[in-house]
Image 1: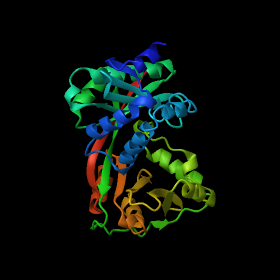
Image 2: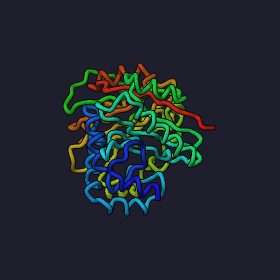
Image 3: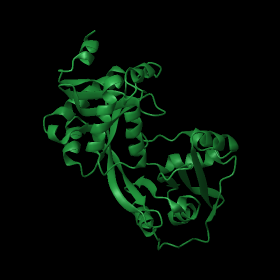
Image 4: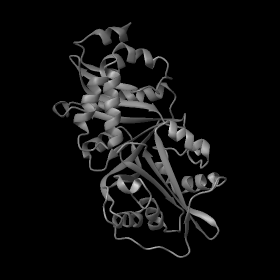
Length: 328
């Protein structure tokens, strides 16, 4: 009854649960302002979809009833001032893990910053995670976002690692052409899924694994996977590096079929090997990736790999610190 009263009260000011029936359009506008210049094509698409759902009004709320709690379109909280959405933070269960929750999209309109709104939103998200039995809460924040990092540190979050986000514009030239005779770059074969998955898991620093947990179901090279991707409007291509009779590197290129959206690369190289150039060359020579802008995220601590990526036209966009709060 109290929650329903708050939803109907257009003069209420403060933190309340996000109501899809009335808040999605306001949240979309908020995110567009707060993250202007930072959104990639995927982020812009998500904001557009949010506006589409927002226009459904009560139907959006009805659709949320069929989604598990914490897994809906935009679970979390908003801060409203006389009915206007001026702040937002989402909180949802971590993918492929029931142990933790991830906070995202912490945003406050510029004219409302400095009033403690972000702290109130974070407190609500942490409390929600506790109520749902989470062992930890984690988030990503730009390393140059000093006020936000200070806020999270004051709440008990500690940095577990950092990733560099890089971008290569379509048609950018590259200067790196080195290859190593001991490496054999080829397409992976059916039956090698477990090897590649194990490589990816071991090559990902532990402090970064919560943000995008690897799923074994993503490391499938047969026709079943290709059909699933086609039905979802995507396509992907894989290459691996074989050295000393074992797979020591892998790269995945993902694209949306029939669109000019940015492509995405994921790369893993076993400790002690430096085959990043060979893998990048294989991916950039592929069609249609060569004609698209490409994104690549890589552990920031791997400075040598970042230098290689620069030779192939990748430029840093931002570095994200991964922070985590243990609740137990």
